[in-house]
Length: 77
Image (cartoon, rainbow, N blue to C red; front, side, top):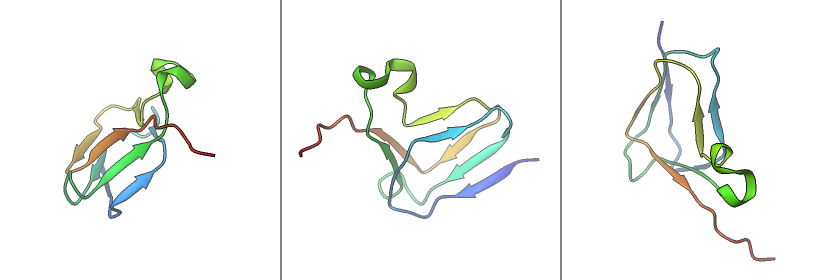
C-alpha cells in the first residue's frame, strides 16, 4: 500500500523525518518553485549526517514537484 501526502503550503520550515516504519510514502507538491521544505541547520551545528532538511529511512519514498532547502543562515539577535 502506498500513502500519498499532498503538500499544499508554499514554504514549510520544519525538519522532516520519514521513519523505517512508514514505507511507500509520496510527498506531492504543487511545483518545485512554489512548494519548498526548508530547515535551518548546518554540519557545523550537528554534523553532516544530522544536518539534512529531510531524513528518509523508509523504502519506497517518492517526491513530486517539491524543493528541499538547507538554510544555514546566521540568526540576528
